[in-house]
Image 1 (cartoon, rainbow, N blue to C red):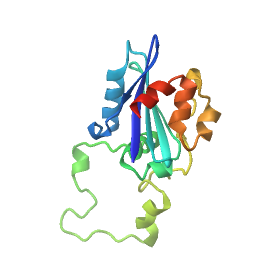
Image 2: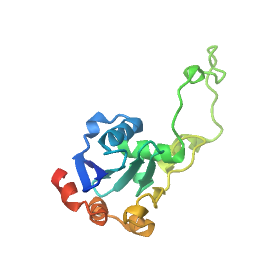
Image 3: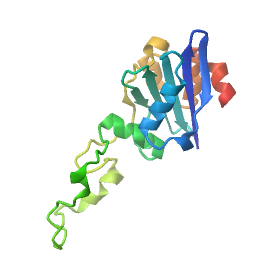
Length: 183
């Protein structure tokens, strides 16, 4: 089960809104929702948590590039919303273009697919490897642990959070009451 919320910084503190993950099909959707929640292009922090297994933070500051942090990338990679973050952080976003639609592996003329000499290649996913030729997904934190530093959550503090991490982040930001109101 997921919990997700947006915290938007205002002149008077933080405003929280429940983040409907049903409306989020991609990381772009999440970023768009965060930007739409911003007050005067100020900071918005999207918080996502899956049952104390992992949490993720996405920070959006106006039109700047978003910044990301995931507490446990290998656990997050096993869930649909967490995998969006880990793929972005590992640079594993698949780009679709005309060549990707073609099967150019030498089998397009009805030949059999080549057989791999390495029997374990198909087991890459079981070993935590995101895919052929990509980086392994680490069993720990991934991303920018300093993304909340100027807001009162230092990198060491963020990296040491485990259960109830979102409440501790909200407490450090001074947003506990508004976060609990949407929880």
